[in-house]
Amino acid sequence: MAVHIDNSRAHLTFRRMASQDFDAVLENETRSYQFPWTRGIFADCLRTGHECWVLDDGGDVIGHGVLSLVAGEAHLLNVCIRRDLQGKGYGRELVCHMLDTARLREAEVVFLEVRPSNRSACLLYESLGFNEIGTRKDYYPAANGHEDAKVLALQLRLDDP
Image (cartoon, rainbow, N blue to C red; front, side):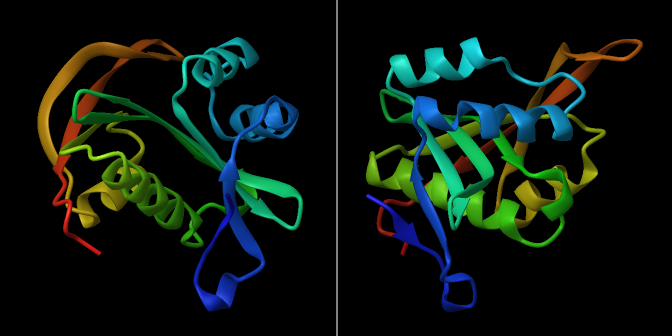
């Protein structure tokens, strides 16, 4: 089922990711991240039943997100907006869609990891109410070794709109 976004972006839809989307998803990943996910990782996410979504602009995949859900907890594993469209609010819409998906699946809390060097993502998550709850040392590969991850959490209220 495709869900339409606000009227100013009515041509955009969220839809479930399919294996046919992998080429576009991987192109966005590769252009956006120095250490992108692989086709195999996305295939595993689909195979294991994770919530995998794409943000579609008239047949053009401009973003994607992956969310795992287990025992009332959700983990936002991947959020990516096509590089040339970053900073235009699409990331916020995608994260909000993923949070709505977590609510629909009755998650009580959403966790995620983010690179501290990804200031725009850190600011986005903070503006949405995420709180830092810890650090994962040497979590992310980096050009000169590894980078720690901030661990963030957001308590969901199931009665939120």
